[in-house]
Image (cartoon, rainbow, N blue to C red; front, side, top):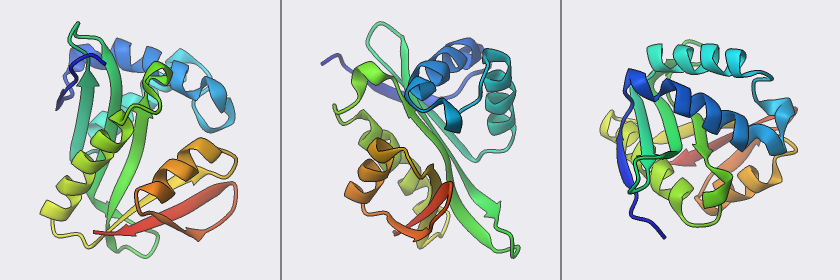
Length: 153
């Protein structure tokens, strides 16, 4: 496997992220943005509203994954929560540990900001992602079209 580097998001990464997002959500388009334009708007929103946006790139400089988290997100009750907004890995790298590496970086960020729990949402029919999060210690706390999962840090 190629050497993989994690680094912070830069504005010039956006086109590569849009393409990656579209590839990764091809298996479950019902949970992603339908068009590249919608994906770009969503990723721009994430970039503006995050406290942590890390990319993974291979030794050729190709973006192969990213994770976005927010250490000061507010839930419906106005409580400050540590939220994982997005974790995307290039399908070519599924099953190679990259998702776990990105997730651990985001969880470390949330913990460093005083959180004792991390939260995220995952599509109810996205079995691959749900299994991944369960393997990494997350548990479902609310079900529906979007399943709310939490993990103690």
